[in-house]
Image (tube, rainbow, N blue to C red; front, side):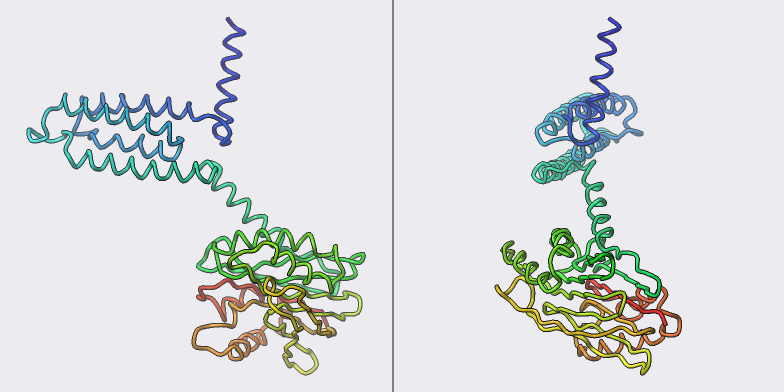
Length: 368
């Protein structure tokens, strides 16, 4: 008997763990909710003023979140039976308060319909509600980790800020970076996927993983070509993206920029205090096969700053692109003396705080 009880406890515990992980059957939740229905019916019959017949919506709503559609129908049958029993015991609704009225039936039926729709959506997606939020959180954290820049050697400083559209957690802008050639070279790719926010978040996650695998595995001049071929193979209806690829020699400060339809980078020359636009030549990613990407070369001297950004910072309806770039560089001039510590976040706040578009800004500074 002890062995049987022990095996029963283990089986019950395993079923509970599997259920809350989203891997097991929902019979535990179904049994618990079926037990609450007669309890609610008994309390309603005893004290209808304190426990109204509409209280049956509670297990129905919980069932919509916990149960599969087939199990949910069994719960609805039990709730309908409880309503029938309550209406018979309490009598016609015209004879007093706390009875089963047509309004109560409509409210319970409406909650049941919404619960069934939610359960069918979860069944179609294949993600239990208990794991759905965890999965989205994990996806968001993976994008954040993939966008982290590697630590730079002494004499270099970087600042980066990503701001999704509408205050959402997912963005169509992302960054992948790696130090290659024994750590002597920094390669950074800033990409803006078509769309914004949640609409572009899934594609951005897929592309950030693919681009992170390509970066450092190919010669710098072959990265955008391989990325372009990857997007073409996806055959998405809205599958294009813009991208800018920085290849920076951390010893000499020399760099190359390769662009795929992206906005130019901006370089601040410490000696003159002038911002210059630096942009390579190349089409959008995912549009043309066998596209060519021609680099532009430059050099970061002590005190110089290189700024990479997406169109959410400078584009706005009714405003020229050059005007947006001038506003961005004007705000950036305020941080020159301070060494750009924390400047990326403040620049987004200053020039594109309320813009309903994804915004990304990356600053790389060579310290004087």
